[in-house]
Image 1 (cartoon, rainbow, N blue to C red):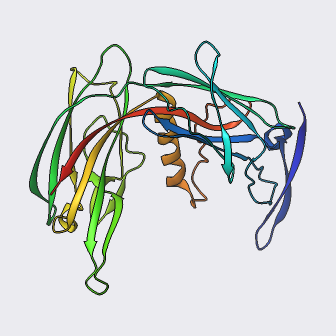
Image 2 (image 1 turned 180 degrees about the vertical axis):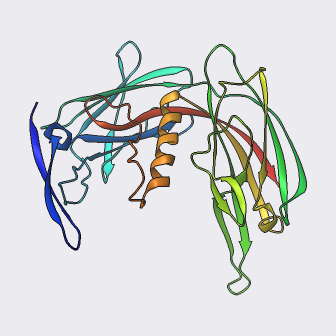
Image 3 (image 1 turned 30 degrees about the vertical axis):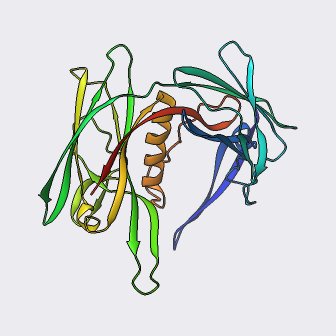
Length: 299
């Protein structure tokens, strides 16, 4: 195994010393980085770039000369991808299907071929939504109870968020501005992951999206309760949106969880470095699937 020596200068006002730290030179080789989170209802896209070592000060570069293919479980090629710019490869003639397994193969000159695989889970049925206005802290909020079916036969992973298509009238211009926004959710369910929580306006356990698994579920029907805390800011505008229940593969879930932890420690020199989850063989990144169930909401 090749090893190198990194020289670190340590100093104080009165004492200085030199410390040599051994590191594995295999770890600083450039690798292909894959970014592909895909679902059963969207155009398939894969972004490719290259990794950098801590000794490399150059800019990240997209990879634009790759051959990208996806096969099914029996290794038959089902779609190829075309480079559309900035390292993004898309397939316009194929949409992933739920309850299917896909294998990725990427070949780039001067790199080892990289592979990965992902199972695309079935959508999970939303049984119903109960909601009521309530006071959360010192402001009104919308209390929501989301009921959905959970299978005991397999371990399941879920992500829940609320997407709003908000329309606001601009009196100065006379135009109506429309935009999509993730609403802020507060949740104290014991089964949720807290890695992506934050505080706002004095409220704790606030999330842009809720992560949970069914490890400790005790029945086939689960009821998740949460509050939409910025509902009072939006209740007087023309609002349409949906609650989204995402059935995620294990790889998808672990990537989202580890990336949330990574974002949390950024800029903290005293935090333990976080390795973002990867399922790419001979490379880095993520190739993982999910399926959606939507429940429309409006007020």
